[in-house]
Image (cartoon, rainbow, N blue to C red):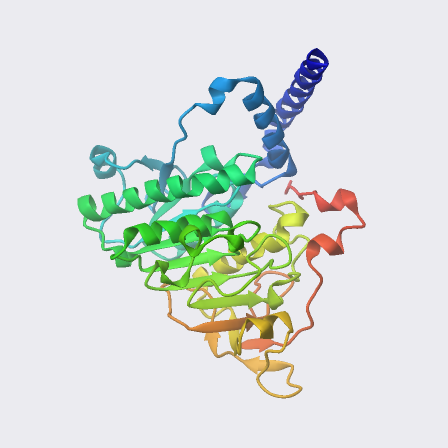
Length: 386
């Protein structure tokens, strides 16, 4: 029986390796020219590669013992295409890079199965560099994130947050960057990495944390010590676009929490961005809305709701039977404008996504994963630009 299992696993590994090689040979199809650089769409093949990695891990015990690394990829207007890798304690690399201590620092933290070369990370980087002079740092924790065992990923988040905290202390002590000038932008599990790093920094605090569709699959059941909370930075703002599946589904996690289109099905899905599989389109919506807000701080007019139940029941309004409300506050933006409360915001089904100074009262759409459920091939499809 054991021999049969080993043979089966070996054959499966070979087949998956052949599949991976075929994908590599066609890699030109997966390159998309972003505004200031190249990026990779997050394809279902990347998700499938986690299976291959786990099988190799089971067959090769030494792989389980390999040290996992965290890297910090610096981009500025002087190097928008090519990263400069920074590491905690490496003053020589910092001094020889284009890092400028007089510019604000923005650190973007990807989610599970992410990497710094994906289009979602490139989109954030490009938006900031278009906006002005920033030290834009993409935090690469892919050594941890590329793991099919999500519980194992969650367990490793404290270690990742500790390394991130040490890096920001290094920038503060060596380059004299005030913590208030550091913003952490997290997507999915990256939000909780940002939050725990903020806890470890106390009594000092980062200027802001932007949490883009905070993951809730496991995290919402954890003690506040192990997840993002409103006290983890001077200002914490969350944008929740997928409370039905992958996002945080219980209550607010920041000083201000925004729920585009009630946090359910996003009108542009599936899939105007063409950068992620359809089932993840709602989850990545928060990220692309935030990117637009960096370029235009008044893109997403919002109205305040009484509480989280108002979001769940779709009861937010600015007066009886009104279909259009004047904006009370704006979601996202650069620099952070401090707000308090829970907010509803409407978006368009195509770019630009924001409705500007108005908020349209719309009926909620079903989550995208349900809207395409009857088309199984569509569920995992990513449209690759030619």
